[in-house]
Length: 73
Image (cartoon, rainbow, N blue to C red; front, side, top):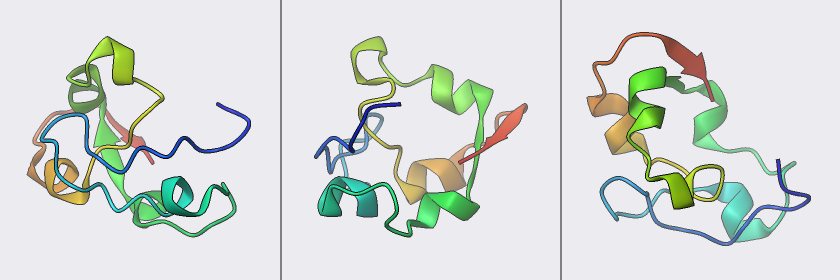
């Protein structure tokens, strides 16, 4: 994990706003919707390599995911 959040407000899958609170605030201690979300391994595998660990998936893409092997956000 990076020392501080990167200011990337776009979902790497759909290009929409990801509503990432840490990306907006620049602090990892900021509460975010993703802390209670579940992301499947299949969903995370769809994130393009250059954007892995750089940009957060949005709630809409997370909710639409039907993959198995879920991982907590």
